[in-house]
Length: 369
Image (tube, rainbow, N blue to C red; front, side, top):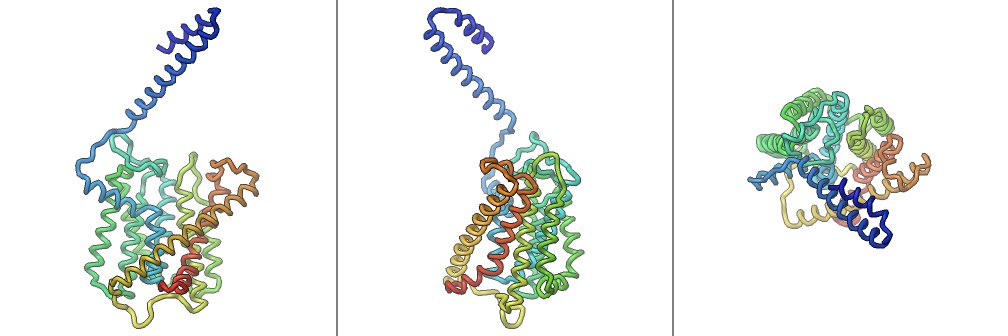
């Protein structure tokens, strides 16, 4: 149809009534544009497998479980453990989170094994689709965080171990199964992620106390952690296309580095905000007053961390754009290693520092702690 219309318009150019020709050409052009858009939408719709949700409770359960492995969960859950439970536990979780995520992300980009193809699977997430598949870092992080919390909490808080074990297994299982449901990983990806995380947990568990002592008491601890983690981010494996893995890894290591330096500062100042008295302490009673204070800490803390993130991100990007003489309108420049790594590392190191040093002191000032 488009060929015939084009020929008609060429013939009409020889007519004397130029106004009639122009009007006809405009209408034909609009018609062809509309046909092209309809064809494009049809192709795009055909390229994405259709699906029908038949069990909405299960659908939402797995989507919620998948969100437990996203940044928004970690940036809210882990700080809350520091603010409302025990900074000791938060420190342990951050250390293991950084370790398993770095190992998992590097393995992805070294092995370069693809995610499941769509079709036949239906992918319910798109942000990390450019990443490789094996191992599942969601499964790794869920396993590491659940069982690190379980193993560390036994000496800090009084609780029934069987109940804690059930919760840890349930959380790790739900997050792992959600990666299959959302079409982002194969069974092999998930199993390998769980096994790698288990090996890292078992291999490092005997040295957790030694790591704590170095992290809190050694005078060069902050320098070692900051330099080492930045170096690991900068030598992250290069790919032939852009992937979110390097940026996400820098976010995690930056957060851990900042928090580690902050915990060292708290130790030197003699105010760690850890539970006082004989350990393990009883679980705090959930009263209306405790719930109100916890909600207040969450809201105020979230505002503090988000403000820190936005301010440092804006300033660091402005400085790096100026340093490398990049136009401010070039948003793709943020993907360059020399801009992405320093910017994200500075941003999330600041978030970790503010969370570990300033947040609790602000809560004390406001009467929330």
